[in-house]
Amino acid sequence: MKFKKSIIRKAAVVTLTATLVASSFTGCGSENSDDGKVTINNVSYDPTREFYETYNEMFAEYYKEETGTDVEIIQSHGGSGSQARSVIEGNDADVVTLALAHDITSIEEAGMIDEGWIDEFAENSSPYTSTIVFLVRKGNEKNIQDWDDLVKEGVDVITPDPKSSGAADWAVLAAWDYAGKKYNNDETQMRDFLAKLYANVLVMDSGARGATTTFVENGQGDVLISWENEALVTLQDYPDEYELVTPSSSILAQPSVAIVDENADKNGTQEVAKAYLDYLYTEDAQRLIGENYYRPSDENVLQEFGDVFDLSIDLCTIDDFGGWDQAYEDFFADGAIFDQIYNN
Image 1 (cartoon, rainbow, N blue to C red):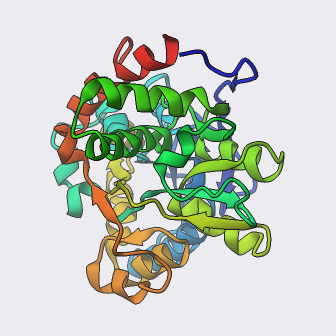
Image 2: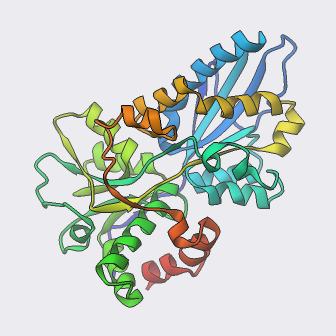
Image 3: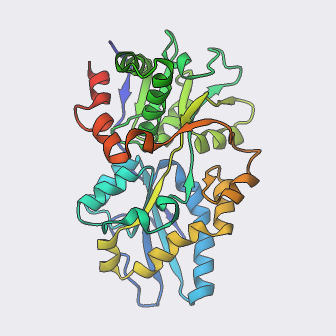
């Protein structure tokens, strides 16, 4: 299977955004300051920056009212896998809010997060979910309706790199599940399907936001394999230029959150870090989550956004792959299925 010679596998770039502070920085201490102000660092994945900019203001107001303490939140964004590696390598995160559980598990395995983190917060420490959809240009010239259409000759696909992007990992699993249904779990045909899909990939960015930029701002590709929330934001920003296509099946993507215990202990921020993640599950925060096109984990709040999300889509889950540890070993570890089909 030969891949497009024009493919670009972009290097990971981490973008920092400071919220409620005058400047941005990474790797700085988050200790309490002399004036009683507390600073914490939230290391997150690509598309969450707008949500957390607003959420941080909401939480800071709440925390001030509850405790009398001012809190500042620094946020940084990039491909989820790249962000996890940055924490392991010294990014002084008090909390991580990443695209998939395995990225947090890698930080746990480095000794920085206590065992059992996934049970520390509700819904397997996943306060919001999403899924994988397609974004096409207005008119949908290539008539892209389902995963089958992404493997057709002449279709240029934009998607991030599974080696650095959580969205890309979820997309690989969603495509594999679709192929399993189509070919009655014949692994040879499923591998061939995935290989054909990635043979059509024109640009492979390091993160989901970079892939959106490539498709929307740079005008490359016929279809973007996208987070649902990212696609909905694009429709909001460019209402007459793009269309969202929901495939017949996809995957329940569950971004995860955790306290980076080693850093929070060192910085004296365990209490505020826990409050910061707990507050994500409050009704007000859940509505803000929905307003930012993530699916609230609170079922009652989710139903309020039934006109925004396609709640009838057939979604497989990570459990269908044996959990994230097994899925990573099978698909994304060096030499696993993705490397086999991509490098062949």
